[in-house]
Image (cartoon, rainbow, N blue to C red):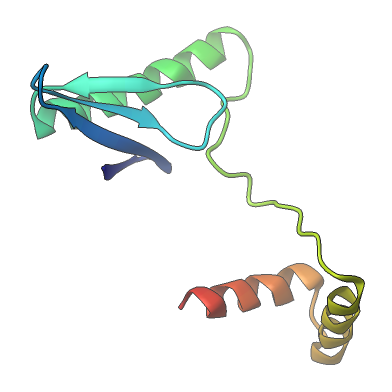
Length: 109
């Protein structure tokens, strides 16, 4: 499986050997956005066209298009860990959001 990107959207791509065609689906959305192409160039264009079509469809209906990620997520933690994080946030003099973002960035680097 390969990942393609277009304007902040990500899609997984597979190759169907029998049909001799690449096909993909935009990830992390409730809406299903698919595309296909016989070459890399066709696939890139098909991904862009499918996303643009979805954005146009949302505009026609007066809806905001769904974003792949909102930038928000809820975390459930043991109360002792929650207390420790709250103490660290207070000690560091930053917001919980800023502290968690830094901790996540550090964990991923």
